[in-house]
Image (cartoon, rainbow, N blue to C red):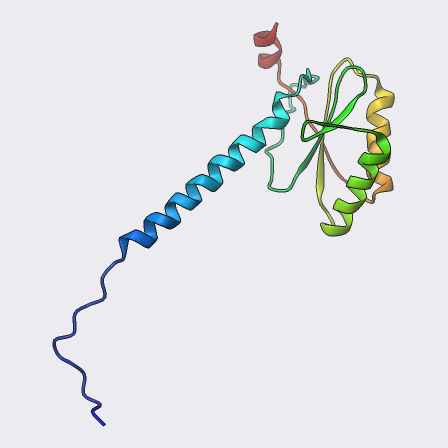
Length: 143
């Protein structure tokens, strides 16, 4: 057996093609994620304003519950009944304990509608609730 090293061995080369493939796949992933994250903000909801409030940064996996002026509940641009929302929230709480829910309610919606969504979250054992608000600059720019 020959245990001697070869003296003329070349150093390992950097493979560019697999690196480009990985970068391309990451680019596709982040572009797709950015598109889907903007869908929730396209729902026609005028947020109430607060001087210290701001729209929370969306974390991966956050569920955003939109409540429009008429009290209609939508998630991912799909209108849900309270029972369907409860089923979705219950499944979410079972799969991801401690998961947060962002509630985006229109400023003209009745408080009963917001409280019904909060009650559904509590029944589904979700306690990490965030409330989206707008700032006064958005209010003046939208008017």
